[in-house]
Length: 187
Ligand SMILES: [Fe+2]
Ligand SMILES: [Fe+2]
Image 1 (tube, rainbow, N blue to C red):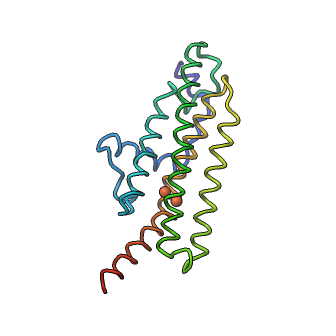
Image 2 (cartoon, rainbow, N blue to C red):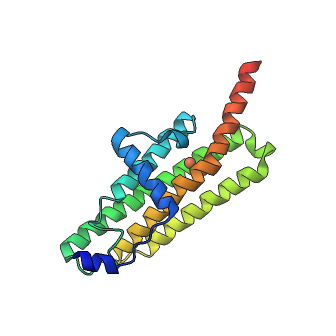
Image 3 (cartoon, rainbow, N blue to C red):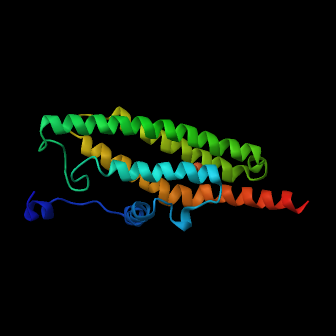
């Protein structure tokens, strides 16, 4: 692809994508979550690491997922390889999110946060449902000439999840648990 052609293609970047580049760079260098996204809850942090590694893998599928408009310029063999990699990743991500959301929602119930801070938990669970619905939407709109668009959509969704959902909802949940733990230790 020439520089001239690259310049004529709009590249969609937003703040969450930029923030994620920093997170992805930190991940590639250290294999760890950046400190601002560490909740302190071992299981939740372990599962979030899977999410960051899924994004790093997703970004390796296409030669230029930011700039390519569609997959027409790639040969059939490349398209088939990309499609099968993306289908595999979508399957893994979807299975992961169902498990991960179940983990967090059972922590909300077991820690009694859901009784004390119902609205906060409700908003957290609604965001989970929205993320799951968007992954399903991406799965159902797969087609072999627009794999790159689906990669872009999944990348944007996972990026927003990391930069917004974890930083807002998951950190509130982990703060509640550490407060609960310190109360128990006080007795
Ligand atoms: Fe969550
Ligand atoms: Fe989470």
